[in-house]
Amino acid sequence: MSGGLSLDVVIVSYRCRDLLRACLDSLRAYPPSCPMNVVVVDNASGDGTVEMIRSDYPEVELVASHSNLGFAAATNLGARSGDAPLLLALNPDTAVTAGALDSVLATMESRPEAAVVGARLLREDGSLDHASKRSFPTPLSALGHFTGLGRRSGAKGRLAAYTAPDVESGPVDAVNGAFMLMRRAAFEQVGGFDEGYWMYMEDLDLSYRLAQAGWITWYEPAATVVHVKGGTTGGERSARLNWAFHRGMYRFYRTHYAPGRSWATNAAVYTGIALKLATAVAHSLLRRSLARLRHRRRSVEPSDGGSGSASGGG
Image (cartoon, rainbow, N blue to C red):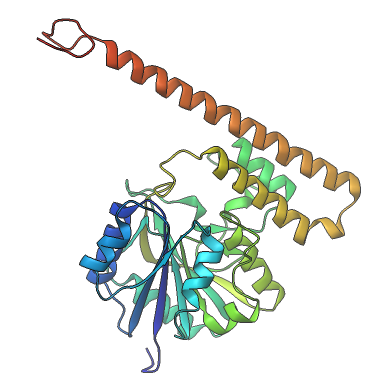
């Protein structure tokens, strides 16, 4: 790697103190060969995150927001704190592994046409996170992905195109925002993340705008990063997150696809997004209700050898 290379890492946190600790520990354990500055933007977590960083990670630059800015705005804010030529947007529910940072940095240095380099994301159980790489969505590929038809074993063609299954390494439409190494000049050229996205789809939108500007995104599977899928959302999307996810889908389509499509196609897509949102909210409410019911049942069941009272007294 050239001697002038340096890296700014921006991590946006919200009520995920323990996950963030593991992420920062991994950066300490496996730093890159070049100088690295780490910035954490805390979105008013109120869970001791700010105090933890101040006491345990003095090398980390902390930006403590007084409100939840969302991912896009908070990442842009963190990016403005540094001036390194390379910028890494990193989720707090990730952990880098040995050599991962040097691998993506070397790829970026050898590929001047690349604005973004992504890593191979693995779940905690060692399985591949298929969201590591993606194609720009089409109505058919989105249908295949969200109905599960395109995710079945052996699925091929446009129904299966959402996760770019044919790309093993190299140019790809987009990579996951959990780990996006970016060329700062390109990031700033297109205006950074679109802050009209509160959370979700801002990574896809950025890759799309970079592609429109002539840049490419590169998938580098030699770099491995562990991703606790859904770690920052508790594994279950709240109503607000469900709204943000589907609003992001709507915003992406309206911005980039709708102007070139017929009104009938646009109406069908918007209806599909609305129906998917309604289904997701209904499923989420049902799962939460069932979880509360199971909790109540456990709380009134007698403990082994107990007196049979709800408190287990004796």
